[in-house]
Image 1 (cartoon, one colour):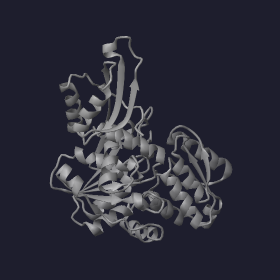
Image 2 (cartoon, one colour; image 1 turned 30 degrees about the vertical axis):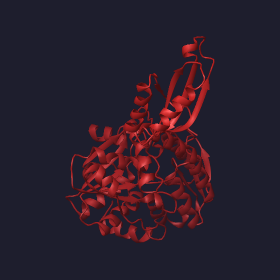
Image 3 (cartoon, rainbow, N blue to C red; image 1 turned 60 degrees about the horizontal axis):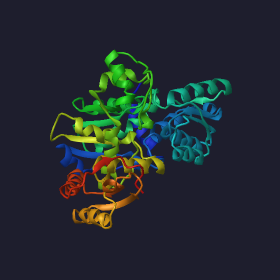
Image 4 (cartoon, one colour; image 1 turned 90 degrees about the horizontal axis):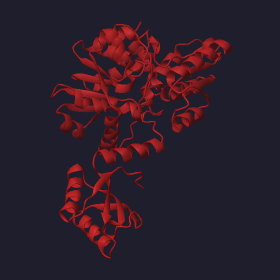
Length: 405
């Protein structure tokens, strides 16, 4: 059972392996949402995520015999690093099963702690099934990434830290994959203040917890499809599900495209890298139907590989209208390219890429296709640049940039 005594014990234990992640007040998000927004930056933990809390606390409660048999788990990345790091501190063997789609940075970081990594399955659930099989065959001690009361107690220590810094907090937002973090945080939060609201946040295309709460029992989704790989779970934990039923006030779902622009906002306004799953609680701020409340968004992790990071930045700039591409057909005569360039320059557009194709038509009046990718200050400025070209007699067509840089 998750009890106050166990939570207090876990708080002392996890201090050995965690950094104290002070709440960060966000002027930007406060102004954007109308609530007083604080960020709990668990992306700044040594392993890059909150998961080390539960992993270390769980392993600390095992007997030496259980640890000596070797530890095994399945994870999309952050729990893997938590277990690998904790196992290293206890000089225990760790075998980690990760989906084949796991970002390279998470695979390499897990290996760097001395763990054996095996890639298996396309999603977490398939990796977990294989981990159970190996645990039975080899006699390893299985450490579940979320469906465990002891582990969830370790994750819930986040709530104790929040209350110590902000006793008057009104709402805590926590991301949801399998439910371990949400169960721990909500259970302790309600013990400390029964009137607080705790809300889980899921990707719209991996909302297994919302579906389960609606059904009144744990259900399995037919599939998941989200860029928030750390929360791409088809079946939530049945052991911790009753805690969520009792203590969670609501579940908010967000679309992937919301995470993309929020990544841009966090990296520009708070100078932090937060992975897509960790951004769920930031995206959820816009969905709250309240004002002037003290809201804490838990940023669960920051383990994002550089390729994904660059793609998300590019898509975010496009969605915000700060980068866009147009194509224009020009007469095949000297000076037309200079004329278009001067119009864009006068409107303060900044050209990133230009392609001048002189062989698209035999019609000399529209023989040249000019494709221009440029930077703007935002959607309004983008429209001003396009209108400036239209006012000079051109017919620009917006198109999707294939690559920015």
